[in-house]
Length: 147
Image 1 (tube, rainbow, N blue to C red):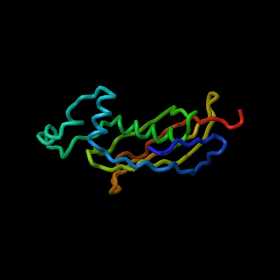
Image 2: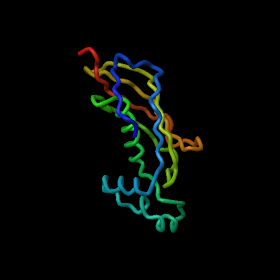
Image 3: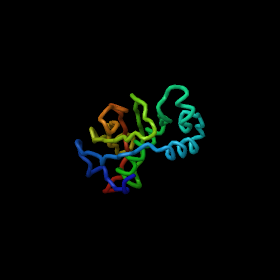
């Protein structure tokens, strides 16, 4: 992950791009995520098993993609940020060894129920440009500079 930054609601404008996050899916990362979430299905860590069922390699749990997006949003928003909503649909499988690129852009801002929100459009692609997730959206509560 990238170094934590701090973005205040007042300073964010529509069109601002978030720093891209590049992630190469390693077997170690898949095993660690499986352990952290108690998802021990062999699809996520056993190369011999997945080859027997016709898959090229172990693959990422769909929730891991959401965790990566949330991490990217939090690193951008800063220590006082809070991901209030995240919506996405995974369009393709991410296998061990695949490199993915997560990107985002601010598409709106609002103040709702006392919260200062930046609305983000997110995309995830494989290194070759093929989509993993399109049209993902998030609302991130940001700190106010002038409280």
